[in-house]
Each structure stands twice: as C-alpha cells, then as structure tokens.
Length: 339
Length: 132
Ligand SMILES: Nc1nc2c(ncn2[C@@H]2O[C@H](COP(=O)(O)OP(=O)(O)O)[C@@H](O)[C@H]2O)c(=O)[nH]1
Ligand SMILES: [Mg+2]
Image (cartoon, rainbow over all chains, first blue to last red; front, side, top):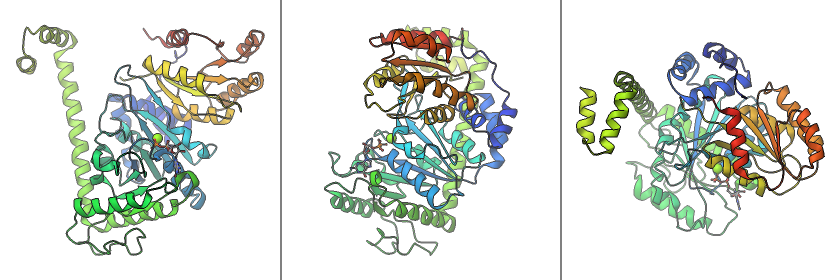
C-alpha cells in the first residue's frame, strides 16, 4: 500500500506550515479540506494569524478567461510588487455521478511556475453548489495565516448561484467575454449583483463595446445606488468615491488577459475597492454579515454532527430503510430521531 | 472525513499530443478521483512543484516523445528533492518494453503501454490506495 504512513499530528504540521514549509502547507490544506474535528482544531489555532490577506474572487461563465486573468493578476503583482506573495485557489466542479473531478485551471497558470512567491491549489466542489467548495474559505484562511498577502479565488462559474464568493472575498471580479452566445452572461446567472468590478475580457474580439454598454445599462437598472458620483465615467476610475455616503459603482474594465493587456487597471480598481471598503460603512457591514454566516455554518455543522453521533449509524440506517420503503414519512422519521 | 485520491496527470517533454493524457484523466475522474491536469510541455520541475502544491497521492506521466529515459528519472528526483518520495509514480505512452525495467529501477512503479485499457489503470491505482 502506497500511503501507509500515519498522518502527521496537526499541531506540528501547523507549526511547519506557518514557518514557510511548503510541503507542510500543502498537507495542512488537504487536512483542512477533508474536514472534521481536526480541521477545526487546525483552523482555531491559525485563526489569530488570519485576517491580513487581501482576498479577491474571480467569477464568470466558463471560458471567459478567469484562469488566464487570475494568472495575469498574480504575474503582474509579482513583477511590480515582488514583496507581495500570492496564493491562488481554483475551484472546479465535482462530477455528481462519480464524485471525481478534473481540475484544469493550472493549464492557464504555467507562467507562474518556478516562482516561490506563488502557491496554487486546485479544489473540487465535492457536492457544494454555491460556486466554491465547502472548505474553500477554510483553505483561504490557511494561505492567509501562512503569510500570502494576496489571495485569488477562481470560482466554478458554471451558471451556479455564485453566492459563496461574495461571502468569502473582499472584492469580487465578474468576468465577461464578448460573443458568448447571449449578450451578457452574468445577467442570466444573476451574478451581476455580486460584482465589485466587471471585466470584459477578450477585448481583442468583436462586440466588446456592446458588452461594455450592456453592462453599464444593467448596473444603472439593477444596482441603482442612491447617489452616484462620476456617473458614466467609472471605466477609468479617475476619481474614487471619497464621501462615506457614496456607494461603490462597479467599474467596467476591458482586458485581453491572453496578451497581458489591461491588468494594471484591474489591480488599480481592486486597490480602490479596498480603500472604499475601509472608508465606507459597507465594509463593516460586509464583515459582520460574513461573521454571522460563518458562525451559523459552524453551528449547523456541529449540531448535525452531534446529532448524528447521538443517533448512531444503526438507528440512522434503519430509519433510512423505513423511509425508502415508505413505511414512514420522512417528517415523522426526523421527529422520532430528534425525540 | 472526505478523503479523495488526488492524482496529477502531466505531460513532460515537447510532444504536443495530450489525447492519451485526457483520456486517462477522465477515466480516473469517472472512478471518483480528483485529477489535476496541468497541460502540455511540463518540465520535471514544474511537475514536481505542482505535485507538491496539490498534495497528490500519485503522479501519472504521459509521454510520447521518446525522451522517457531522461525525463522520467528527472521527475522522480525532482519529487524526491521536495520530500515527495511516497508519491506513487506511473507512466503511459509509447515506452518500449526493454526500457520498462530501468524506469522501474528509477522509481516509476508502473508503466502502461499504448492501448492499455483505462480500467486496468484505475484498478492499479485503487489497489495502491485501498485502505480497508
Ligand atoms: N482571444 C482571447 N482569448 C483569451 C483571452 N483570455 C483567455 N483566452 C482564452 O480563452 C480560453 C479560456 O480561458 P480560461 O482562462 O481557461 O477561462 P475560464 O474557463 O474562465 O477559466 C483559453 O483558450 C484562453 O487562452 C483573451 O483576452 N483573448
Ligand atoms: Mg478556469
């Protein structure tokens, strides 16, 4: 058997990972990803060292160029600010039929190979439906604690409800591309609402301007902030909102990620959005919503676990059999198990 | 709790054909494994670094270029340099029978020739990681 060695104890693994041992970091990520009590103990112990990284989410339909853009953002950052290390988490869907996955985002990230200031991790959703894996936020915390200052998350983007990313990232970039069948993909998927920055990638293609225009129209119709500064001029982001009552209006930027064009402007917008969040009450509101959701999730998971431990596997199996045979309805069955 | 077998499928060398690599990647996915596919023209260093970051249980190397006798042992040593000596290494593609022994001596656990049934590869990997 190939993997016969017993797993390393969590505290030692955490120590080594936080000291910059990349092998330990990688293993710690797996243990956190696999979940359970040991994952929580690891997360609790690293928690004081989290909260320092800037977390940027990249979402959008498959093929729009998310992976390429993520790679370019990382590359640009490493070239212009070499002191900033970059962690990348790229999420792809788990097949609901087999439970397996092919994770292919690294194909577009080969320019980052050989840079010790970059760490890329692919994750499968493992049944989660909100565009990220259940453990993506936890893996991001590990990278944050390990000292990565910029963390980029690429979501599944397969027309799922991409709601998780808004709860995980400080800034969400929604990527569009011209001519992907329908005018603007994001509208269908309902992900415009979560966009802090809109990027129309593949600006080398026909129809870029109509996509840009369509997005501006959607922003005007949809988000309709109570007071908008610099209406219609945010493409350049010449003057960021400075008064606390001004709500952020997502800029619409053009990139050609495959040719490294427009990346500086994207990073500039990320920086401005970060400044906005720290000056505007919305930043604190977001942090509070995030804390509430996180605590609720942990509570729910622990409650279910406690309950399952209490019920025991035999009683559970027996009840499932009864429900499957329609000997009892699932509502009464749950009530009995809870009694 | 949720442990999955994770496998890196990589193509070292300069040949530009990744059909075989993609077929095996899909077969492993259909067998419930998580497959990280890194694309064409990977150097041994790139492969080992990806294996490290992805914490894979195995690395599968697809090679058609004829350079297996130099490239595969270099992948093995790059993995070892990074402390990944327990990672299982297997290879497929166009590899003549007479080269198999020296590849195995170099640390490649299994070599699958052209036309190998993917079920056979899946069974081999399952056999290596069976926990029960
Ligand atoms: N023409 C053009 N193609 C691009 C651009 N950016 C990415 N691509 C290509 O679009 C395809 C999908 O890119 P990828 O980054 O994998 O998209 P993802 O599925 O959203 O992660 C690849 O073939 C890229 O090379 C671009 O700016 N222009
Ligand atoms: Mg991608």
